[in-house]
Length: 330
Image 1 (tube, rainbow, N blue to C red):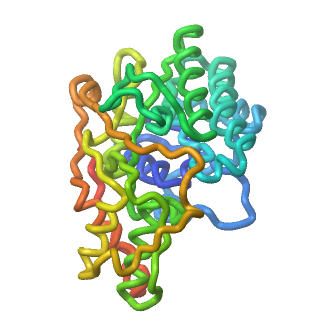
Image 2: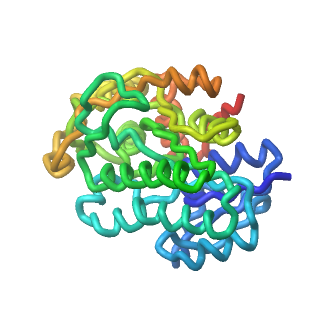
Image 3: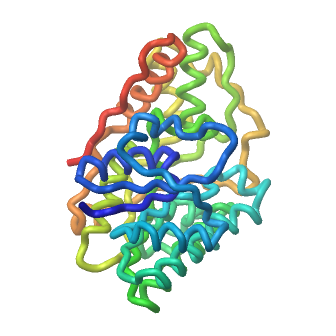
């Protein structure tokens, strides 16, 4: 039974990844920060099957401790301060966790057992003000937020440890991936949640920022499979993971509101508070390398993703049993 250690296991990606690893026969160790509030709702159904340890990417000692205790075959680093708007309000914290935290983890692996494989969760936000369309593994980075800048550091330090110390460290440059498990602060879930509340008479308006921003949106359950496939290759590398399609926030609204028989124009309010200081206007992937080398392709189309998220939030506010997002593991 292989052992995998997952930082950020309580997040959207961590919950889907844990399900995938358990299905493949792994022993799963999840790393979570100590908190006085319950933050494990996404993995409550898994708590009997996984082990949760307290640790923090700020704390080198805790990283060394659980690597020595569990000696995992694979480490998936999903932990980060990952909400882009917060990175402007807390840029130093974002850098310490999202950038330097990667270095601490790589150092712990190098010290405890350099044969441990590591996956680093890189981000399409690294491309920022894009210099070419679509974006590939070779596209230069031009980050437009403290979060994007921190992710660039995390990406390059991963490459550096791979080349300097022969550590099997891969970097997955994942474009936007969503699900009903996405946090309410993210625009996609904010829209699906808002649509559900408006449809059920619990709210009237939905305040949003830039409706013209375009993103490459896919289903998170598909993307964790790409993470695992990267770790099964003979040699570590960088991979862009996305759908190859781009859609605007406005399109997301059109589909979400239209699905429940509403017109988004009657409810969406443009609010300057939600505009970024430096906008990322267009992100769209070229995932051909992941297709050819990993044999990976997304399974869910954009309209189906939007509708699934709306259905889940409607069920929540109706007090119905939550809709379980389908799992696509190949």
